[in-house]
Amino acid sequence: MAFDIDVATHDHISDILYIEKTIESGYPATRQTLADRLDMFPDGFLIIKKNHQIIGYIETCIWYVQSFSTYLDICEFSKLHHLNGTILFVIFIGVDERFQKMGVGTLLLNELKIRIKRKYPHIKKIHLVSKEQYVNTFYKKNNFHQIKRLPDYMPGYSGMLMEYQYGVHPTDGRRIVQKQK
Ligand SMILES: CC(C)(COP(=O)(O)OP(=O)(O)OC[C@H]1O[C@@H](n2cnc3c(N)ncnc32)[C@H](O)[C@@H]1OP(=O)(O)O)[C@@H](O)C(=O)NCCC(=O)NCCS
Image (cartoon, rainbow, N blue to C red; front, side, top):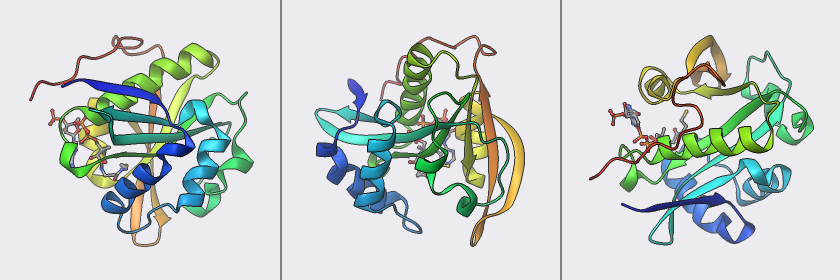
């Protein structure tokens, strides 16, 4: 399967929103929220396409924030986003349900790691808050380790703060070949 990864543009927002609504039934982002995140940090908002169709995306910001407890503490990302920060924070990663577990999320994460380090070499680590089912599966496989449980992260579910450190893993800087299906 051939995939293309690129930075998102406003023309992509409708397709991203469609995927967001199908995979994030609890708290889907609105069109305006996605557009604001794109304007905030275009280099950190990637899409992945297969045959010209968007099948996944990842949104990020850069900050200095080391500690927080709930989503409410951090949800105004644009106020916390500073390009000089040393932490890349993944706000959300999503893959169209029809293409999950085929290596697409891993491709997106790897491309993000490479692009961000190339353009923002001062970034030392990547943080994100994982849902329970991805802690020891998707993120562990992608070299993230557990930092701290956040029991009240969102109403109704806890999260796990996860960290990826640049320079520690042998696959750093290499593009991983996607799975054949
Ligand atoms: C999380 C997500 C982006 C992963 O994308 P993906 O393309 O399915 O991931 P990959 O195919 O690269 O998966 C790599 C590994 O992650 C694990 N994994 C992926 N999806 C999983 C799932 N739903 N449950 C458990 N493990 C999963 C598997 O261990 C897989 O490795 P394997 O195929 O060798 O077993 C995708 O499942 C998704 O969009 N989920 C819904 C949106 C969401 O909740 N995003 C926020 C996550 S905190």
